[in-house]
Image (cartoon, rainbow, N blue to C red; front, side):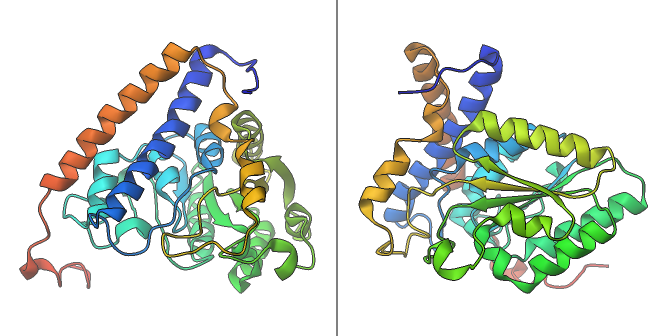
Length: 317
């Protein structure tokens, strides 16, 4: 049963709309992948929608987002058009990266969405650099950096937390702890599983958040962003969530108990908001139309001309 909301109906409707857009977009992508319309690697965000919707709700248009290879949800919540994302999934020239990046490399400088990064933890140094530039230029921005708990085993995580804390940089570190990284349970790979505690060792304000509850995410992200924007230095949120699908479309998902997956589905984030049945149906209808148009756009979009494939490899100065 969905938990009743205590927030204004319009606020709840928008949060639910964002989560449903992400869910329905990815469900359509699964169909298109199976039909071989989308190729290459594809990592689904299904189950984690409350994190993207909640954190991005707390950001302003001037803030910056740095993402991971599981970034469709972040991009949609940030306002990147579904048409451009879908065209990128198709590898078309009308996509966010001219079709060159596909699922893992969505990019939109206009909306200050700096990837999409296929390297685990690869966005962390980028986020620290962007935040350093903002601090040096006295720009009141927050750089929100999404990454999974698997990235905390990488050296750049420790380097970046240390520098961000040392220089009091305006970074919101948003760790999406979906419990399994690529395919290994957290407790089997990390001696200390309290990730907020690990981040706090770098003198960074850090706390865990129920990443399956969009209201909890919004409240935590707003609190953290207000502090970061006010000069309190970097903050770290351990967003405890769970992906309902396998790590990627190529993953047979044999490392998790099916009963465990079903148990987590009882906490489905799209069920944390209660709307009248008719209103929810209207939302689904609106989203279905948007996605139909996005798919049609991607189908009709051109491929990049062969003669231009070497462009953008080097700067055209």
